[in-house]
Length: 337
Ligand SMILES: Nc1ncnc2c1ncn2[C@@H]1O[C@H](COP(=O)(O)OP(=O)(O)OP(=O)(O)O)[C@@H](O)[C@H]1O
Ligand SMILES: [Mg+2]
Image 1 (cartoon, rainbow, N blue to C red):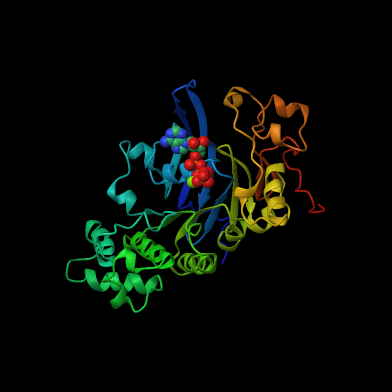
Image 2: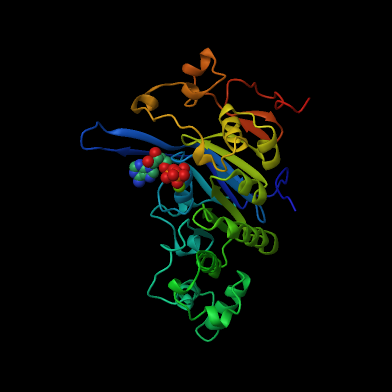
């Protein structure tokens, strides 16, 4: 059930040109500006998933934190059902917003409070967001545990986090996110700290939630195989910019941007995740240079790449790339068109 495409209906969540720059000051170094998100735009519809992939430091978690409103963007818009939430809620996310956009973090050990039972973790959001009255809250918590596949739920509900495996904890974290009945789930590397053997189970659960509850998911991952499994679309992030985006199968099978090709090649070369891709040392002068941020690593670099940051261009109806190798309207390599 792929819902991406030409639907004229309002997107559930739409991000338009958000930007975030951090200034960090080392003891012995001059202040350094890091562009963590630059002109990031995408949409997620109900029952659809979008994957954000890219190497460490590319800005994936920053985008997640901006969406969760844990961080305020320097510019751009976040629209939920067409409404610009940044304009309406200038001071931060309202309870209502938090009831609609929820997050699952990478570390299932750190995200649960060790002194509290599973029940506590679920009852709190249910009551706070008025998703259940005190008389029905236990039954609702048990239902949530069944939804995430923790059975027998009556047994799990009284346990403490240390009595659970990593995979079970991540299921509790997902149940807690679901407690408020959100429309959007942002999952920041939800499986990267889990045993390889149970990663697929968590991805299957997310796929089921997407399909059966119409949940919209932003999956952040180093792993292109996971991205392709869960998401209809992949966004490739490099130095805070979406350098390539399109239908997952196309991005993986016929990557257009030299950076995406590098990612795919690093997987084909036997390493499983993007983190193993070669990394250039970030140069402090990077932000001062006007050219493409990938130019100094690019095997196909042109003269123009050193002086002009490429604007995004369509290479197909549904695919965009930020790269001077392509002209607007050109077809992706290998499609024969
Ligand atoms: N609060 C902050 N203050 C200063 N710099 C920050 C802050 N948060 C993020 N950054 C910088 O912004 C850039 C993007 O960081 P971010 O955590 O979004 O990357 P990421 O893609 O999630 O990386 P990883 O795969 O390692 O989780 C990095 O250079 C990081 O050091
Ligand atoms: Mg991160």
